[in-house]
Image (cartoon, rainbow, N blue to C red; front, side, top):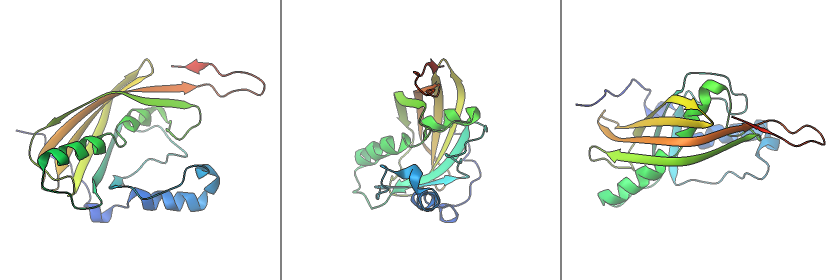
Length: 182
């Protein structure tokens, strides 16, 4: 058995994260100073992406299509390694959603503390995979996140969990020092 894949628009109907960032860079170049936008080895297409510059509180759930940009050799171990890399993409962000914060804020400290993964069925990381993410809990400056990864035909191919540090620091007043909050 497996959880059913949720309804999602096909990847062809969703914008690539790079295109979304290029549009934001054109509108707000000052926000990207020192953060050049290069090509990435993966395609990541978030469904209904959160506004990272103006975050609002929302449910701790998000979905995205993902795959490598090129074709990979047929070695299943390589595909598992690549999916482990892909599974770290945006998972921790899920726990920030109900708090109306974004990793782009200068006063937030985020880091992965642990990450586990289980492979359930064969898959290819160079074919579209739907990444369904949720965060059932965040407290004590830590967020717990879960991810289910489906092949395009609806097979649950892998699951991931991650606990991450999410610490928001008070903004530094002029001439003062910042204290952190949990």
